[in-house]
Length: 324
Image (tube, rainbow, N blue to C red; front, side, top):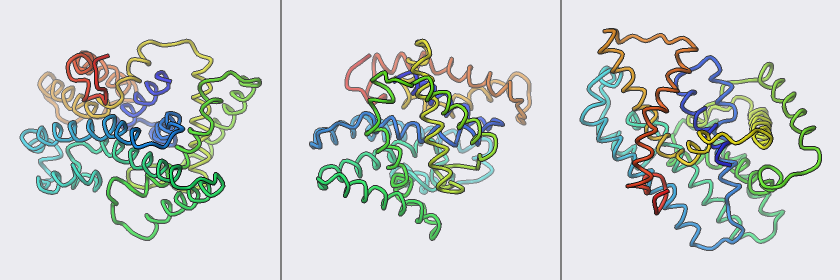
């Protein structure tokens, strides 16, 4: 499980470097995390799990968001594109709590939108499971919720609190993860390799011929039906592939540290660009595709010792209550 999460967070870092395969990455990498979250949803709907998810998602979100906001306030907004945009500190402070609004409200750290949104998805699913006992009715409410999530951006340009519309859409992936977890991750089943081959062919077809622009943060899905199918095919393909691959310890490590990586990835790139400015004297960067991959490697290397320190001394920044 940690391997596929590690793979996913590396795709997030790479995707934010604007690679040529950006549309491919965005077609499934966020649905992957919503689906994995569904895998870990407990069967019992007691309130303890809500408190646990607050500790795992919301506390790290607010701690990191304040760190990133004050870094932006006292330093980041004075340089580069942020300085040219002359953005409002008050709006960006509001953005810490609202977790939406693009660069006007989240110039300090747009990638952080994901944590409140996935918490909302969890909470909605938890409420449905707790108060609706009939499974058919549960599925009906989920389908209607997903439909509403798709409709909202069609009729309004308002950025909803904690990306509520995205959370509703993501119920489809969360629910899928919850009900298929044994097949996807925990149990071996006959026909796995055949399924992997078929999924690989479908994934290739979708990626080559039916790929469209997707940006869940901005509620951009293209054709909604194709988005769901393409995302599920992509997620299923990679999940099944990692079941047959050997264990890569570095992927497992990064998979255990997705929240700090999500928070630090953009600032690590800023640091690398600063070093390049000081060494080569240019502030205009047109990185090749190979250079973008190298950038990801340097970003991960920069974050690695910080991740070790976080897990040893301040594990709550990683959603943990004790060091790992």
